[in-house]
Amino acid sequence: MLKLILDEDTGIDDAIALTIAARDKDIELLGVTCTYGNVTVDESVRNTLDMLSVLKRDDVKVYRGRDRALFSSSPYSPHVAGRRIHGPKGTGDIVLPQSRQKEEVMDGVEYLKTMMESRSDFTLVTTGPLTNLASVLLEEPQLSSWKGKVVSMIGAFERRGNVNEFAEANSFKDPEAAKIVFESGLDITMIGLDVTEKTRLYKRNADEWRESGSEEGRILSSLLSYYIDNTLGGDETYVHDPSAVIYALHSSYFTTLSTPITVVTEGRERGRTIKGRKGLHRSSVAMEVERDKVEAFLSSIKNYF
Picture 1 (spheres, helix red, strand yellow):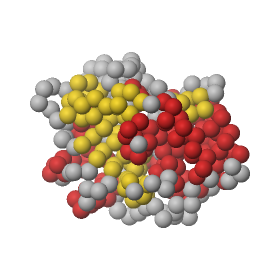
Picture 2: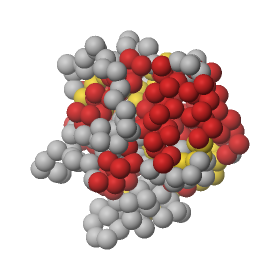
Picture 3: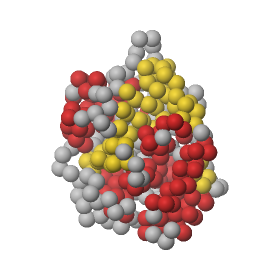
């Protein structure tokens, strides 16, 4: 059984990643920490609570993390492109049924610190900017020797970015945080555009989920359909955030490269993930993916409903 904590900026592809983590029989979801990115942190908390309720997982605790990049003076506000891709509140063109559950009183960074200090038998999967994890490391530097695993949907190593030609969205929103995490010594695997743009979710997946007749299937179908229409269009879209959870569960589907990674924090290449200098801790970078296996797994999501 894979023990997992998710750190999310819960928009549409995060909601699909959350569905896998909350419903797969081989995953024990320990908790969810929220951050900004696709949406504000307020919206991320709300969407996470509501989505967990839809998935009948109100038992999973939700923690509010940082609302801005490490060195920003004001809370993050999503860009126009993010609002277009994920919808006005991060849930496409629908409003999720509101959960009765509340976020936990404990701060998300405190929760991560507490969990990392007390145990190393879980994997931390991040699908947004790395601000929460970097905050942990800044406050408790000794946790850079934590023996658990980190899997992050972030970056682009040999592909162009999706914000500009250099940077992927999660690394672009807080390059300083990403640099701290990659250079920390943690056991981290980067699931970047090198693999997430090689696999697809399809309109037929949305159709299958809707045909389940369940509320969660209908809602996820609507979310995916909206996401497809506002990303690649046509009948398909990339598999960004779900790929990180799939890697945590089935790493054999991916081929990785062991290399030092750092992040550019200045100039026109700000947010770019690049090979670090000799002597830096080596990270794992996913470079290839068995597309048929990932897409077969994604097709099996219909069995959750």
